[in-house]
Length: 436
Ligand SMILES: *Cc1c(COP(=O)(O)O)cnc(C)c1O
Picture: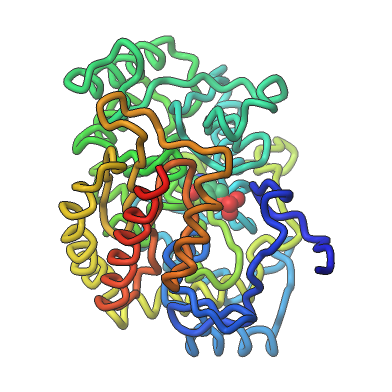
């Protein structure tokens, strides 16, 4: 077989000599070169909304590409960037201005730069960033520093920015010395103690749930209490909605459902329906106004990317949002969420299943070798490799996060397809039980 020159993400290349080659998308399916059709159970890394090759989105791309493929937002503007910004501040109540970038990691780093420069601009010495243990905000150094998942980041620890981490609630594996009963309160107390020191420029966290941290869904009022703690200590509150917003957890802006308005909100992933990469960092009036002044005062935001606000990406995001309205997608997601929920009981009866966490259109199924000790299921080959191969036999595309099977379907997946995804997952777990 010809040696592939592609270095794949988060992948032990020696374990994968034989990647399936996707030749086209067809609705909710990815079609392999050998003809296998894979139901996209992870929304192509959590970003696909309508399935693949959706005609309205394809037309929006081709229309925009033939009119204007790219012109910068440096000194200039264009229709799709303007119109999308208007739409986004309506989707994200309390937000005032939109800064575009080309991926989620950059968008999070921009949020941090905004917060740091905000305090510099208003002449107050708040300098520290605080974020949650087990968070994930992207793979570039700044984003890694704000997240921290030891398995992903430990090699780079000495090179990261100084960000202080506070414990995050975890219903299945509470932080050491916490119990399941006092976990949330201990986490809130830790936030209170850290912010009370008065030096924190911003607290950064994912909105609603820690996704890459293993679908850790926050307790009901936790996020709104964190928002209050930020407010009482005059710390900017940054919410990363990249994975959880745009309907993944059942709301357009998850922070609305969580009764917690941030100062800066970050969107990515499903923003374009999964068709072109785009990030958006939204700031409220307080933050964005602090960047106004005479040119010579140098208060403007020192940041910009070549493809900032690319016309094709912003045009397809606009069309994506139109489709959300036209198909009442959020209402549909809430119904579809019930279909997923209907499988929880059956899945949880499996011996290898330690915990199931579900909200909206995401489910994390945690596999353990022993439910009593909660020891994660492990093997020399990666679980991901094993589960991928089993899932392929059932015509489904899955990628696990360590020992957690992630079901993250495109939001518009039909009821029969969601059922197929769940019944296939049950069979996959049964097959795993014969091995472990
Ligand atoms: C995926 C993700 C990011 C990073 O986005 P990229 O586009 O992969 O750089 C940041 N935050 C969260 C919560 C994510 O899930």
